[in-house]
Length: 330
Image 1 (cartoon, one colour):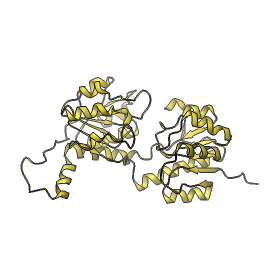
Image 2 (spheres, rainbow, N blue to C red; image 1 turned 30 degrees about the horizontal axis):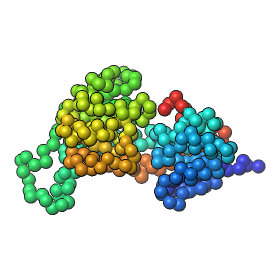
Image 3 (cartoon, rainbow, N blue to C red; image 1 turned 90 degrees about the vertical axis):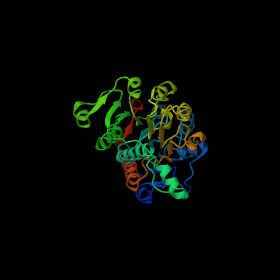
Image 4 (cartoon, one colour; image 1 turned 135 degrees about the vertical axis):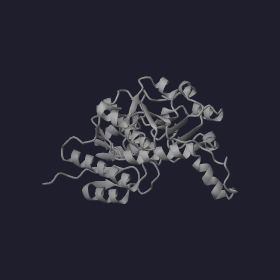
C-alpha cells in the first residue's frame, strides 16, 4: 500500500508550471490570492501542513513555530528562495522541523541586475529616460547627462559567494578592477581568473573603491555592515549598489550621505524595511530604485520551484533534502 501523500501548503502564488507539478505529486493547498499571509494565517497553515512552502515575504519566528508545534504535523519548511533570514532556522530544528532553500538558481539573473544598476547610476540612464518620456529633451548637448566611465574603475564586492563571483566575471568584461571583502579569502584557482584582490579589512576596501556592490546575506553579523561610519569613508565619487538584503546598509545614513553629496549615487533593489521605502530615496536624482526584481526571470522562478519540489520529494522518500539548511549556515 503506497504511503499517504504529504500535505503541502503554499503561501504565495507560484508560476503555473510549478503549481501544476505540485498538484501531481502532493496534496497541495495553493494560495488563491497573491497577498502575503497574515501572521495568524501562517500559524494556521503550519498547523495543518506536513510541508510549508513560504517565500521571503513570510516571517516565521520562534513564537509562531512554538504555536504551530501544537499540531504535531509540520515536518519541513521548503522555502521558495535562497535567503532564509526570515525563518528562525534554529528554533525550527529544535522542534524537529527541517528547513530547505533554493540556492544557486538565480545567481546569473541577480548578477545581471547588479551590472544594470551600476550602469544605470553611473551613466544616469533614468534621467535620460525621464527626459525622453516627459518630452523635455531639447536635443544633444556636449555637457548634457554626463556620467562616468566604468572601465578602469575599482569595484568592491561585499560578499564573494556565487553571486559575488558572477558579478566579478561580468565587471571584468567591462574592464573594471575587482576587489572583494569576504570572511575567508577565495581559493587561488577561483581568485586568479577574476584578477581579484582580497581585502581583509572592510574599512580599507570601502575607502578606496569607486563602486561598492553588496552581495552578502543578512545575518546578525552583517546587519548595518555598511553603517554610518563606513559610509563616511566612501569617496564622494563612489556609488553603492545593493541587490542582496536591505538590512546590510544603514539606509538613513545612506540617505544623509547622498543628500550631502558625500556619496555620488546608489542603485537599490532591496530596502532596510522591506516595502516601506524611505521616501527621501524616491526624490533623489542620483538614486535608482527597483522593486526587488533581481531574480525576476521566468526561467529563474521556474527553477526555484523545481528545487522546492525536489526537496519535498526527496524528504517524502525518506531522505535528507539536498538543499537542507542547518543553523550554522545562517
